Structures are given as C-alpha cells and as structure tokens.
Image (tube, rainbow, N blue to C red; front, side, top):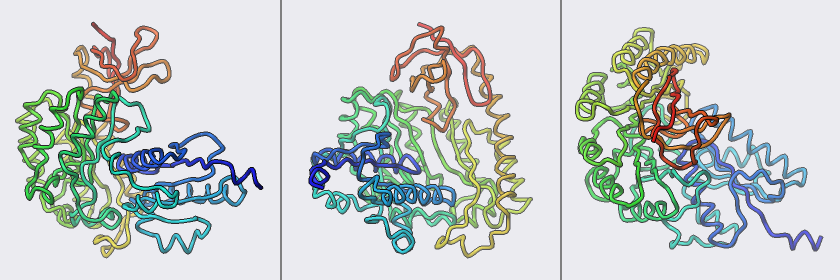
Length: 437
C-alpha cells in the first residue's frame, strides 16, 4: 500500500466534440503542467490514474458518444485501472444533476467555465501568467484561437447558450499576445473560432470589432494565414471583408453557418434573416472578393420543413454553389425553443434529406475542383498519410474541407511547411498535385 501512495498522479485529458472544446482541453493541460502536474492529452499509455473527460452535449450522437466514454472510464475505475474520473464540458454543464444521479461513480462533474474548480482538485492554482500560452495537442504549425465564449443568439434549435452561457469577448491585447506566443512556437496558421465570431467586441467595445481584431492579428510577425470560422450572417460586419481584401495573410475563406434556404424555416429557426437577405450577403461578399471560398452548414429536418421548404433549400444550394458545405440532421433538444414544436420527420427521413443535399454538393464541388486543374496554389502540409503528403490551400480548413494530396514517392515535403502545389487532377473533395519550385 505504501508504494501506491507514493506513486505520482498521471492525468489524461480526453476531448469530445468540437475545436472549441479542444482549446479548453489545451488550456487545462497548460494550467496543470504549469502547476507541475504530470498531464497529457489522449495518451495511449495505460498508467494514467486520473482521467478528465471534456464532453460534448450538442446533439444526440455527440451526447451518446460522451456518455459511452464516461461509462468506459467508470468501468476502468471499478476494475481498479484508474483512481479518479472527472467530467467537464458541455454535457456536464447541461445535465450535471441527471449525470450525478445516473453515474455516481464519477468523482466530480464540472461545467464549461469551472477551470479553477478543476485545478483545486489537484491543489493547483489558476496561473494568470499562463494566459495566452497554450500547449497544443497537435502539430504546432496551426492553432485554434477562441476569440469569445458563449452566445446571445436565440436560435430555436441550439442548446449552446444553455451550456456555454452568454457571449463574452476576449480582449484584443490578450489575443494578440497569444498570437505572438504561438508564432514564436512555430505556428503559421491561426483558426479563429467562437460560438458567434461576428458578435465579437460588442460587450467589450460597444461595437462589432472583429475587423479591428483581424488587423491587429494580421500584424503579428510569423503568422502567414488567419482563417475565420463561425461568422453569424445576421448583422454581418462588411468591414471584415474589407480587411480580408487588404491583408494578404487573412485567408480568402469564410465559414458562415446559414442553416437553411427557406425563409419560412429561417423564421421558425429564429435566425433574424430571410433567404433573400442571405443570398444578397453572399453575392456582396463574392463581389468584393471573387476568389473567396465560402463554407456553410445547413440543417435538414427542422420542425416546419415540409417538402416545399426542403426543395427551397436544395434550390438555394444549387444557386449559391458554395465552395464548402456540411449538413446536419435536426436534433430535438430539450429546453430549446424548437422543443415545443412538433418533430414530425423520422431520423431516416432527415438523413435522406441530408444525403440528397450532399449529393447536390458533390457535383458542385467536383465542378469547382475541375477548374483548379493546371493551376498552382500555396499549400500548407499537415501530415503524411498512406503514401501521400497531405496539405491544404488557403481555401480549406483543418479536417472539414478539401485536401491536397502529394505523392510521397515523387516529392518530399516537411510537415508544417508551405509548398507550391500544381494541381494535376481533382475529385469531388480532393486535389492531387505536384510540388513545383
């Protein structure tokens, strides 16, 4: 028994869900290590005796995956393989009381803003001097940067405000400091994320201040690409596009979740806009930057979406020809506004609609990619996989967008380097390229 008590704790952090959760895990990892605690992220080692699971509670599938992971580690605890299991993140924030009743073997549950409370469990203090510093859990050449937390929007389908609270922007100076620290560590690409990035600054500066933030981040030496995610379309600040146009290190890329292409459904979703306004916004953006890649996400099967409204969304996608598109099926979430509406469609019907939209998008993406054959693009190399070096152009974000595949038997590339990639052939979602000097 004596040897057991002398054994030093080893902490393993498991992350579920989105890039925003990943950032939270990286901040937790940095704080634990800054306090001298032996911690790692998703370690494959079997000698970790304390597990922290950072959960996702966004939609049914994600919730189930988080619960399965908790049960897996609770089982390991009962077998004596681990000593403690802590649960944090969105699922824990939203369902803490239920989870405590259902899974009492978990040692403690924490919400999304409970970092100091987690640290207390380790007799550790929140170190303010580490703000802006973050250990990355992946290659250092890119880093997610969370510019704000929470959301003030009233979207009918979304449980994020229940889990993440109201909108809180991070000060520009703090974000610039973080960018400088990342650049010094070798980061070349910053991916700006938030629940709603176009709302940035309203709380701190009494105005939408995303354009000013982009300018100041753009001035940080060593940052070659800045990529903007999750820009809410209603009240979109067009000065952001002006800055994108004038600064060469801000990618001509915009992730703008539009959610639907029917005005009636957008109204039911409480999005504060119409299909016509969304189309007008996309046309204006493309007029200012013709080469821009626009990524959007849509929801299939929201209450109020009949055959007519779904067809309007299909027509919308065919007309807009988005460079990148993702489709979710509607998830009926308790305590959201839409939960009071009738969820008529079966999961199978929702999935059929989502699949149909993605088939339409496949053809659009194929046609757009064919236009790239013979052209040369600057590409950032992310990894080597299956005989190929895998990279991305400025028009593609990590893991969700198209990739550039370079034959490793013909060319050598270093992960984290930029290369000039001449496209030789293209499929629906991939480009094949040769490296040219």
